[in-house]
Length: 79
Image (cartoon, rainbow, N blue to C red):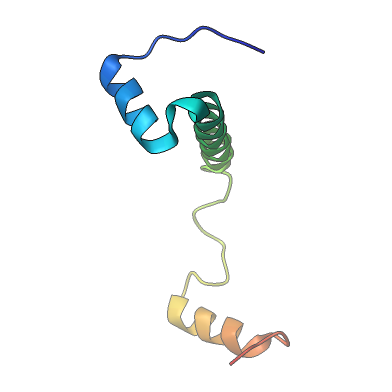
C-alpha cells in the first residue's frame, strides 16, 4: 500500500546517504517495522508491570542464597 508521508530535507538527505535513493521505501519500511516491534515489546512490558506481588518470593530472605540454590539445582547446568 502506498501512503504519503512528509519528511524534512535533512532527513531525506540522511536517508539517501544511508540507504540510497533507490532504496528509500525499503529502508523506511524496515525501519518502521523495527520501530513498531519495539513498541509492541514495550506494550507487553508495561502490561506486566505490577503483576507480581512485592513479597512472598523464595528469594525474599536472602537473595544471594536463592541465586546459589538456583545455580546448583538445575540439571541443565553448563558450568
